[in-house]
Image (cartoon, rainbow, N blue to C red; front, side):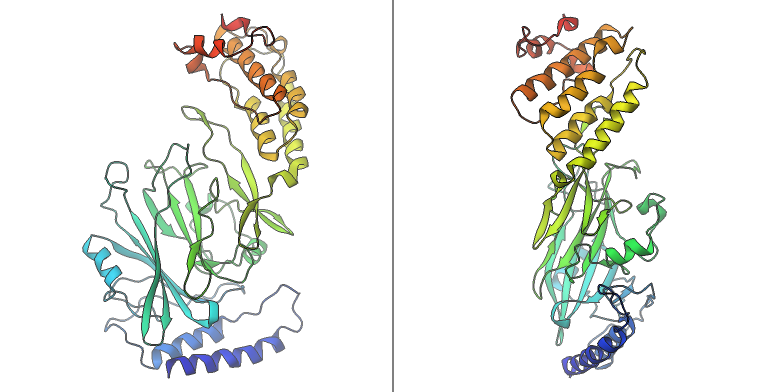
Length: 426
């Protein structure tokens, strides 16, 4: 009975939507929220088992978007208006017993017109910095409403930060409400109507790869000191790939997505993926990003296809550095090294970048520089020349702390001092 009512409503929507869509642009989708909300209401009215508690959430009415959603905040004893309560579910009951709380939940229509619900659990009593084994401070569970059962499809542990970064596991997590995101999550930025449309942002759901399948977005914070800036946060997108398989479509990216800076290019759509692993020395970071685009079934690195754009960035960095010629270098200059990093990401010919790098690092441009930084300059030049001669990606020179340490002699032994000048290091 439940499924027949839902099917009838979906069929009616299918007949009405083409009529409404006649005057819309090619990619535009009509606002199907009212139709879908009615279908979800009918499901519960038809007798789907619910808790005796009343719901606390409200159906939201954001701008038209590609995915219809009904969103509520809930507790374990307060069911969504679109799905069964989860307090009787074995998986959820186990999390509750272990001290987790249901912090957020939301439902949407997905593949084959089933109702899918995402539940985010968190346990603030866990200390991800010290607890062992792996501290699962956040758990995401995705269910599908099927006849008289709200079936668990898959659960996800909180993703680890990319390797070689200063973080491991998140210290907190929350669901992003795209209709009214927290200023902390968007870092003071604004999600424009155009971005909302491009990424299919609607409630807690999205369609950032434009494949018509909804994703549930979770925002993770990895710094335990309230850091909200670059390199401390990540948003992951969990897609309802088919009727039985939710997947984290951002799991295999080499970096992280920031909710305040997702879209790189609008047509075709590709996204920024920030590289958080380049902490050159303590609290000194070389900030850069890749460009990724959805390719049929996964995100692939398209940075090299935007090589000219990266070359423009390198030229601008070099021009800014040249304005400072004649001054002494007193500390690490990550803008020098960013030239190498950007060149690597865009796969520019090493020889092409080397000329620019050798110009800005020429010791003659930096009179009065002390011995440590003079050695650093020469090592940076030697490393870059050696890599370009070998036609391989650039490696970064040792930082000043290493130069002043006992390992400098070993570093110098690995450099052909007949070809590369490191005399200042002696």
